[in-house]
Length: 171
Image 1 (cartoon, rainbow, N blue to C red):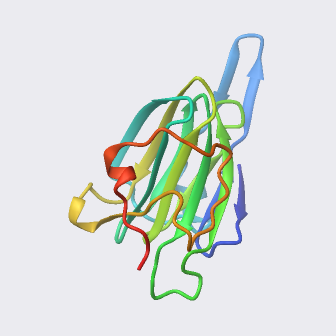
Image 2: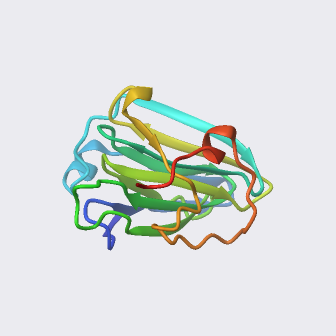
């Protein structure tokens, strides 16, 4: 497994070793000792998945207390992590990653970082581990096109949920 520091403090790209042969493939998706040794230390208590079709965009969703470990179980998506900590000098900075069921990459997003993903294949399964239980009162939603973030998206008119359509622009 390779752990790559990103330009965002605390955000880590994880590149697992993928083994493939004539039978199929194998990948280790989590190893507490290896992750903790590379700065990913929270105890994960909840796993979630979302299922979406091409050009659906989910997010930007940030949690004040929960860290997430994001991966693509099936398909391919464009993942964006945004620093949503308004007290941080890096507030509004973002980085993107192309996660897929072929590369099996994972992205670790610490608390106060927003996560968004845009589906690039016909169908995608988005998987994430959380360091805390979902609590709507700790959640913030930002619009994907918030002018302060200046995020580049590969699709100009994504399919959005009501929550994401109504996301508040950053004050």
